[in-house]
Image 1 (spheres, helix red, strand yellow):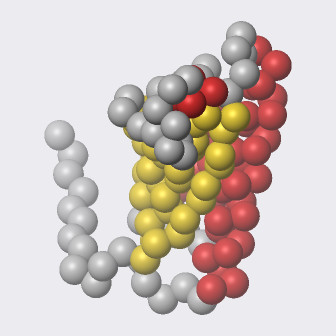
Image 2 (tube, rainbow, N blue to C red; image 1 turned 60 degrees about the horizontal axis):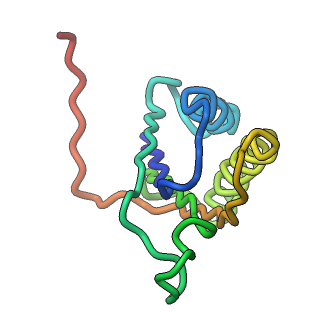
Length: 129
């Protein structure tokens, strides 16, 4: 654990996805909340069909979002979850502020981070294939 899922609208360019994932995984590892670095699993998913607000016009091209969900095992206090959310948000802000100068067209991006506890019904098995 944890699982980090980034959902980014198609108009938000992530030029170096592995770099973003590495930055966020490293920040989570540095938090000291996890026993092994291999516990941290992350992925980026593109959201092709989306709408920000209510205007169907050009809004799709000028508004976007990056929603990041961090799923962790239950039992952490609110301060720890807030700390991990802050680490992820700082990593996202740093990545996109560095990248913004390379984007050809302007997109207003909402960055969102949510920390969610995994259900008590969760199974995990590691295999060597």
